[in-house]
Length: 307
Image (cartoon, rainbow, N blue to C red; front, side, top):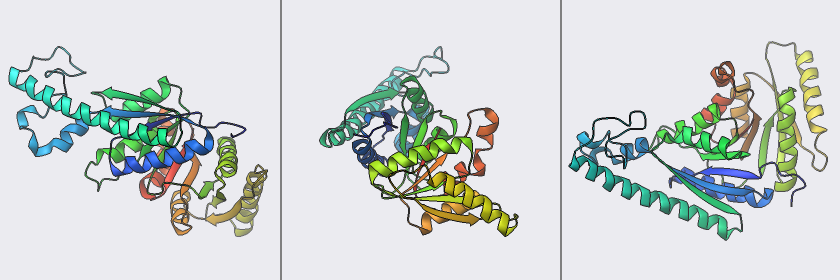
């Protein structure tokens, strides 16, 4: 058992897609190593259901929230739907509720098989990202896990769900990609106060997962080479001293931080990028695209944002 639990309570969002299945496998891997309790969450969303139904649902019925008889969350006093509309709504709701239950049961079975404590929850008729964020804060979770599928996937909403969860949530977020286990971690370091928390998490994960860790510092290219090397070396050395039981690799680069992190992760075949996310106010959210959002959008590696 780890001497310190960094992710005691984990909220895993599932939807039955391939990215979701990968997220389940990676979460099971982490939960076993880090002694975590997992709650499997599925959001039965009218928005996603309508997208998947597409041409199979008559146009007149596509704007009916599932199982509501035509009423919406925003306007519960809306004009009542006809009997036919209500029947279609109920039929669609039943079908998707059954599928959601199956998705949850399949995920729960995996964690039980792996000996991981697991709970389950189904939330209906809400925006997926908002629901995930709300559940994470209400349940006081330490980590949210969301599988990422980009806009090229069948359901483009899923990529936006992951990004919105990372952008607006106050809980640390793991956005999973292709790897189901972790053996190499890339940790960008910048010497900031918040980065100390990231390094602390990295030391625990390196020890408990027996992973290789590389610390990466990216300096602005307009600095004099000598100054850049001095600053970067000091930041890397201070971060490396926090690792007591493992010895991390150190890498100093210059250039655009976001692009350099993404490129380094790909060239080094890292399984996970572990990095920080500062602040929750409106301004910091707006400016997120400078580093974290770029990395999330362009990398093909899993990304763990520590908040």
